[in-house]
Length: 78
Length: 255
Image 1 (cartoon, rainbow over the protein chains, first blue to last red):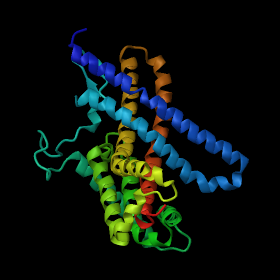
Image 2: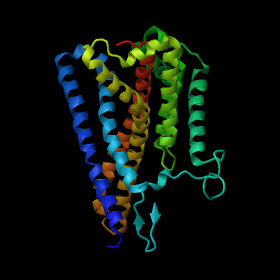
Image 3: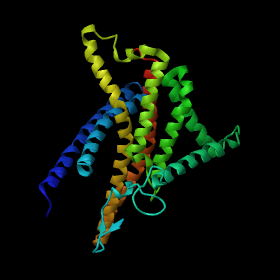
Image 4: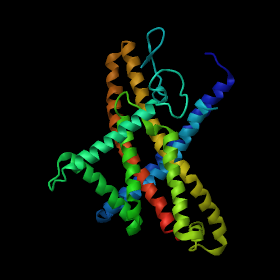
């Protein structure tokens, strides 16, 4: 193993930044799980709300993608 | 797949995103240089034109397969625009349809092995998102004048809370182009990088003589490829539906 301490910090930081994706996973799971719970109670109303579900997924996922972006920035831009 | 000096395959997931000139080597000289990104944008425009023009040429009552694909895409986006924007939205349907179908075809053409995914670059998606952002501001002020600023002044909230909410609304309004563009680029880039990492793992296993173990990552790769096709379609849909919602703010700014 060779390299300098700055590279090590970069890799550790990028690794830590990916933990944000776990939060995105929790968020998307909550959105879809609650949608499904509601949809099974009232299947007739479910079809009209799929667009809302995708919106919720998109917003929850965007924050996870931000942490992925930070990891990329640390790896390739810093 | 790159190969190291000893002949072992090297996992290099980011190589697929390199933009380079199509003719002659070297770095990209000017913004007029024809790059692989330009080429694949042209391919997607040609594919869209082929589908929509050739498909609708017959105008048959009982549609052919190509015609029904074109019709399904058209009616799907049209009903989405009408649901969110209402009757005023008719004017903006061509714009939203153009954005949707360009992103859809760029994403799907990016799944062709050896091709280049134009939407995996923030430069491409940021232009699309900025166009939406600027047109929302322009349409909002053109339609409502200063009344557009009511978007930030939540009248249903108690008076003491309104300045705080206004600050939050302003921040969330200006973060929109950022999240709008990074969502698409990040999804495409992450998905393609994951595919390449698994492909590299496969090549490494076969190179080191453990080919029998390669079945597991191969199966996983097939599954991820299927997921990537789903993501390609869903992300185009999400970009279009967010465009609709942002335009809805410009058309009906009061809460």
